[in-house]
Length: 123
Image (cartoon, rainbow, N blue to C red; front, side):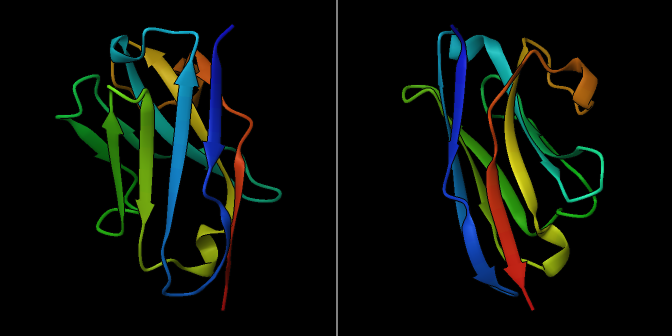
């Protein structure tokens, strides 16, 4: 069974940093592009960042560009999201997702999803 397990969420003050991790199992990790999405209360799930299978191509939402960095370690079957200069509007549940082969940014195109980890940024 495919599992994506996020960790590293928590509460932080505006301007602070967090590093999220997503450990994948049950799939050939290197064959999947990976993404991070987030969902704030009352909002739809939105794209934050994605990374290609080899880690050489990345996409970022305009809202996080320059502040967030996605990376992956294929030997560890893990993808990361380094979040710096956090803002209250970054508060959301953050989800890790996997998409076979192709890097994409649409929620609908991802094959597998984690349970999410809460990130709360206070002012």
